[in-house]
Every structure is written in C-alpha cells, then in structure tokens.
Length: 224
Image (cartoon, rainbow, N blue to C red; front, side, top):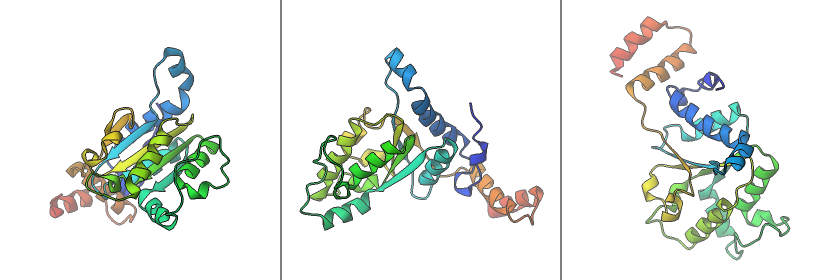
C-alpha cells in the first residue's frame, strides 16, 4: 500500500485518513488491475458516489487523491451544462453515436469531456451538482441530462474513473441509485471534534507562532 500521508496538507481534508485511503485504493485498483479482473471474471469498480454536506471537502478530497495516483482530473458542472443547453435549445444533445465524427462535440459538452478523459487516461471525471437532478427539480432539460449520463455510464473507457458528488444520495433519480450506476459509495460526515482539532492544528502550524501545548489550550477555550 502506497503512502498517502503527503495528501494531508490541506485543512479541508485533515483528519480524513480513512476516506483518503478508501478512495485512493478503489481508483488505483481500477487503473492497475484490469487484467486480473478480466481473468477472474469480476467486474472492476469504475464509478463512485461521494455524499456529504456542502463544504465538507468532497471536491478537495478527489483533487488530492488524483494528484497522488496521479490521474488527470476533468470536472463536469451539471449546472453549467444546463445553462449551455439553454443556449443550445435547438440542438438535440446526447444523440450522437460513438462512431460519429466528434468535430461538433462542443454541442454535447458531456460527450466532449468523456472523449478528452479517454485520450488523457488514466483520468478521473468528477460530476458536480448532481443534486440539481434530484427528485422535485423539474425541467425539460432534466431527463435529457440524465439520458446523456446514462449513455456514458454504459461503456466507461479503460483507465477512466467517474465520481459523482451529492449532498443527499436519497434524493437522486432512481436510475442513479442503482448499484450498477455508482458501484462504490463514500460518505463524508461533518468533522468530528478530533478532526476539527487536526484542522485547527494544521492551520496554526503554518503560522509557526504557537506550539502544541498552546494549541491544546486554544482548542479547550474554543470548546472544540
């Protein structure tokens, strides 16, 4: 197992050793053990869903793990896609086949990024704003975006890993909650007291004006 301790340099992921190792091992195994999975007939995990409150560090966690692997990170903001779709309302998105020429992939931003990720493999595609597809969010664009994503998930390229971010997985469309859609799940809770102490210690250590005993005293005063 490779050392991932160097990842713990960002206050937003301090205290997340377990989560860092979990995601790192899943992605690394997907990239490096393809032949083994084929030989034994076990499907490899190529998708993951990370759940947790806003600001808990979901995106930061993915960015740091990608740096360690290393893997090229592509970020798809679904809210931005929807804005772009509104500008291209006369274009039928997600209808091109994989065999068709990709010169017009700007008309299908999701397809375009998946192709770029394939060419840059090993790579990770991060799907932001999945919650915009949650139940209760109606709109003409919603089923089209879902169909576009489902089409890409049907045939994920080798050494390409997909990660979705959500605040509440329960509210996602039923199709996205199936086990074969997001094969791996990782939940990030609000920082515990110990994690908050580690975050504070990391922030203050960079200032080099306070020692560990003073940090402990400050933690007690702040009621952390």
